[in-house]
Length: 300
Figure 1: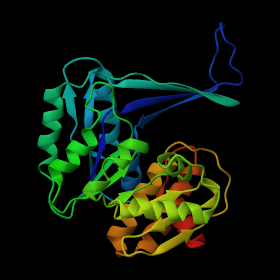
Figure 2: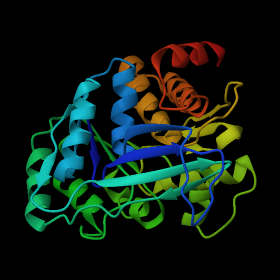
Figure 3: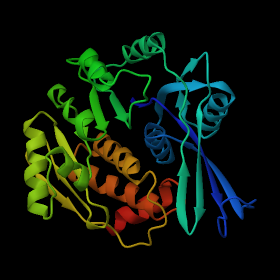
């Protein structure tokens, strides 16, 4: 089974305007509502591809109930911890030529709620996959990724970490199954700007040497490169298409990679499906759907 964790999920309220006039009443041309959060994005794409999974995390208030109901309606299994106070955040995304985002703060997460999450994670079995994605809320311990991985260490659980800089570097000793920095994030980890593919490969290999089993580096329109646990360097370009959306493309790549590996056991096929999923999201107003993913897979 695949599990995803989203510490601070959100309802994303997307408003399309012809123009945004500050200090005045603005009327939208159209509106959309999505269930957001990096782990939830992974869960959504997996479900779109027909793969059952379980979304874990914290919800609160009437917005939390709405988010959970929306995911369940989409066929996504959830096992959220409901907090006593506050409410799940609402992120407002105003699209008017350029995009303006107003992100909510989210509820306080108590130590007892964190312990309840640990209890959920203790139920995972050898061979399961666990996706830890995104930033850590201010009310949670800043070493929560490390604490989770230490707790699960040695149990045969394949842990995927999609985070940045120190959050990622600090968990490498627990040998995550996959990490997925982009080329800019990879450079930031080493305090340098990576300008060539060779430089990217050299620094990705350093992360493998530090403990990561597989290092997948996304490079936007330049495709991606995977340094696999077998030592292979696998390069993948991107299919042709018009980019409409960047939100969730990286999460979609993670979902596709995991599913591709589960289905084939071959890293080239995993990277191919991951690339198709990431591109499908980039070429769509929302997250990747099966028909477009299959079409893009055939084009790679």
